[in-house]
Image (cartoon, rainbow, N blue to C red):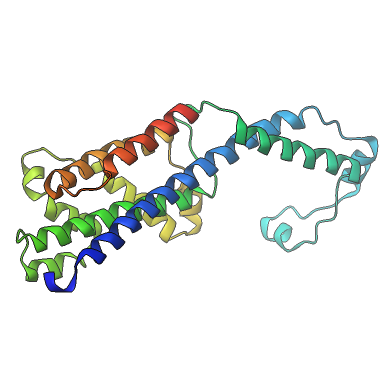
Length: 248
């Protein structure tokens, strides 16, 4: 098995892990900026008063009352150009403010923006890439034989983690409950059903717990691997600090 994978494999896995980690927090920040912009936009809308002409248009517009009917309808403009322009400017202003200002969400805030799909998918890919690299390391250092490596490397991600940490789990030195939750959330993005589309609203506190446990798991990898590279645990800790400083 070791003959098939040399330095290039480790390099690709390292670059892949870095890419997935960067992308995941890009999407998280985008999601939170959108939600902050929506809050600001709601405040801006309070200062926009519909004109008499707007009210007349709304009163004369008959829309279907059922969901499918609305989706199938050709909905006409229900506001004057002047009011539509005011709303468009308000949204652009809100987006600019969200880019440049800080906002403190509560830890119980549920992230509803569609960009959360990108965050959960990429963070799951990040963890899975490091798990795959660690399994390769264990195989090439003789800790896992070729037969076991071939079987475990294609198993489900939680089975791979349980195999790696079987002794630490028995001694209560490692916990994987938050990692399990991460992949449960990611499965909702992979199987984006009608129910999952509504249910997928993770709390900020939930994500922070996942990150904290992820750091501990990654440090366990690093203690054994001793690779001469920037530590992924440190990079992730910096990402956590940035999120906390900006959004909590």
